[in-house]
Amino acid sequence: MPVERETLEADVLIVGAGPAGLACALHLSRLIEQHNSAGRSPQLSPDNVYVLEKARELGAHQLSGAIMDPCALRELVPDFEKSAPLDTPVTGDAVYFFTAKSEWKLPITPPPFKNHDNYVVSLSKLVKWLGGLVEKAGVNVFTQFAGASLIYEGDRVAGVITGDKGVDKNGKPKDNFTPGYELRSKITVLAEGPRGSLTKEVVNRLHLDGVNPQTYGIGIKELWDVQPGKIKAGFVAHTVGWPLDSQKYGGGWIYGMRDNRVSLGMVIALEYKDSLFDPHEAFQKFKTHPYIRRILDGGKLVRYGAKTVPYGGWYSMPRNYFDGGLIIGDSASLLNSQRLKGIHTAIKSGMLAAETIYEALVAGDTSSKTLSGFQKKIEASWIKPELWAVRNFHQGFHKGLWRGVLNAGLQFITGGRGLVDPMRARAGYEDFRKLERPLELVDQSTRFKGNGTVTFDRLTDVYHSGTRHEEDQPCHLVVADLNICADRCVREYGNPCQYYCPAAVYEMVLEKGTPRLKINASNCVHCKTCDIADPYQIVNWIPPEGGGGPNYEGM
Image (cartoon, rainbow, N blue to C red; front, side, top):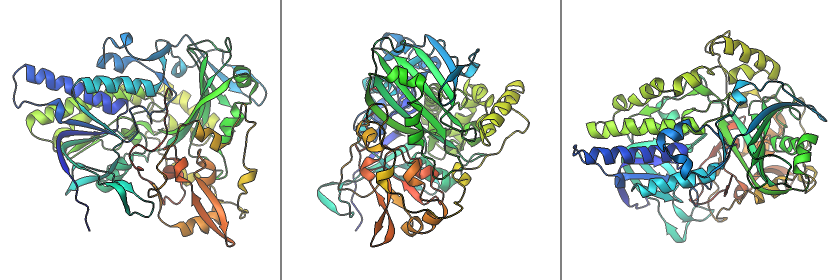
């Protein structure tokens, strides 16, 4: 029997309260205010702009490095320095090449890693601050509401149905059952971050794919309180080399923050060949390097998190407009993979989307033709030259570090072109190499445990992520065919989900002598690596009950 849902009408519905979505809402509210103050018609209202956020509170699911280039925030909030929760300006930077026991500092910091005039920030705190400005402007912000599916009228997107609450693990309504809302809107903006579930849906349905498929990296991060004098606030270091071999693209970071706090982590491209490679274990080994160990000795782990980042760049951008909607921020592949920065481009894309939306509302035309103005605005802004200059950057590293360095040099000389333009890429999961012989099922007791002071196992780290889900709810990690997991994947790849997941969600167990995939969904930190890296593409990450997930407070 169909569920009866309450219907709400909005002019604009923004899915995702990250930097892109909130910048869109804030800039649009100001354009509406200027429009109304001038007495223009039709009169518009910021009260008809809705922002949906699946987290318990604003900022809870926001995680990044994070070094912020303030150029876009300065456009959005010219006096942001007076009130924004900026941790510290960057006071120095360096790049190191690591071997197992030593480090070599590059004599010259490459331009992409120079961070003068940038800020070390907590993305979680920044989003909370932006959200306060949005709410003050009269926009409706709804937390604990996950977008479950899009509403279509033919090929037109007409809104979102939010997830039901109070459903048990068998799909039956509980005593506290509350059906999701049918939120209809003239324009729906997808600002879900990397691998957004609704973005994935609409890109597939409307064939909005870019020249290349999107490629991703997984970023794993910890916050530490360290002893005084271990690192200077504002010092930023990036590393390449150990513990990654030359066939894996990635590196580490160490950011000095205020009050003797350190942000450190690694980001690793999800396109490696070894299906048994463990990114979480690699990050834990990274912390045992003498350079890192000197900083962490005597310190204490405060927070942990993991998130994917979209590496593909300009040639992986989906068509970012369609009848009734736009795609912005990381969902639209606007991260600069060379600088590993996307907060500024996300904010700017939100502002340009707001201008496009305002023009469409005034014209009373929200068709694809009118909303295509968004892409034109991106190409006329500073986003285009910044991303165009690195349009082939990540593809150049697809076959290893040193070939990537050579490609990067050629691209720098040729303005991003390199030897081939566009340089084609394939989805990272296609790079997994099949095992030469089947392996025994992994004994989980033999997995990396860490020493409990500097290095940790997955469950300890998940505890420090603040992750919480309602246990009695349908599993939000939907595997299309569990038989593949228990048979083909065991033989062909050794069940890589046990390795690439940084939260111990996936575990192969023996049940009456037969392998079975056990899914510990309550551990999930919403990085979506499984949806991206599964070699058979049978894992579908969907939002759990609204409010579930990590709590990245201060990260």
